[in-house]
Amino acid sequence: MAGAWMEQGVPALGWWLIAVGTFRSAYTWSCYFGSAALCSATYSEIPMTGVHGRTVAVWTQLSCTLCFLCAFNLDSSKPVYAATFLSFVYALSHLAAECVVYHTMSPARLSMFIFIAGTSMVWMLLHRWNSDGNRPRPRGATKQP
Image (cartoon, rainbow, N blue to C red; front, side, top):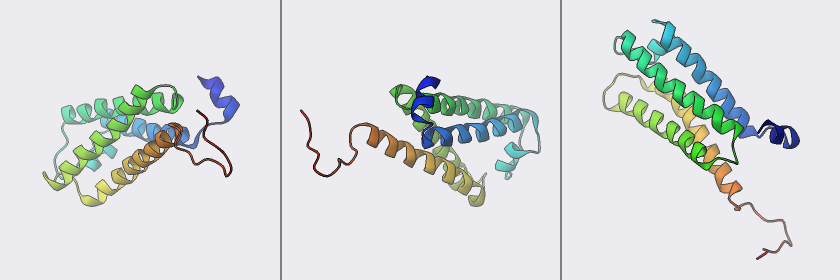
């Protein structure tokens, strides 16, 4: 697993997912142990209870784990890749509903999550598209049977 990274170098998407996973780890830590920290700042329109903070922490910890698993297995595990991609879709959908439907989150706070999840989803789609043999062929190259 790590040997392939050393031979080819770390893919940029892998580094991005590690960075997102690290950010999510900090967010998880905040939700578990900080009542007025990052976690409660996200949902500032409603009072953050202990059980709500821990629920968000467990959910975020799971998505953090998926980011790390996917970063280290970019090309070898399609189910982990799909689960990681869907974790971004689900998180963004949930937070958009909190903002638009329930008004428990401000649009300004949602924008940070849109940036991170949107960048991750687009990058992952481009990576999967390119790894499935859709790369442009060099000039003069012919397709082999």
